[in-house]
Length: 126
Image (cartoon, rainbow, N blue to C red; front, side, top):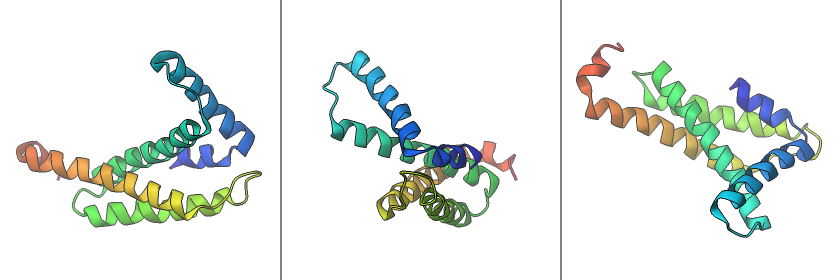
């Protein structure tokens, strides 16, 4: 959550520079054309990935209640977007809340799937 808060505190210029760096790196490796759509997708994938890791962390913390883990992560995505509305050049986007909440859901589902596939190891967590 601290990492996400820090990233959301970056101005639009700094945030754009970070994702621009990642785009140039990927263009160099994969050789595709850098477009505004590619930049947009990188930014949204970053949202999704950050929140997937948050979902994994919350699912491990609230291992007996995946619904609580997802609810906390989804609620945090709302507060994160509200926080961004106070950062220069950033905005509060419902689309990002949905992307973030889906990332949390994926993280929680990954942990649930691991528990289903390896039940003996998960007993030690309790």
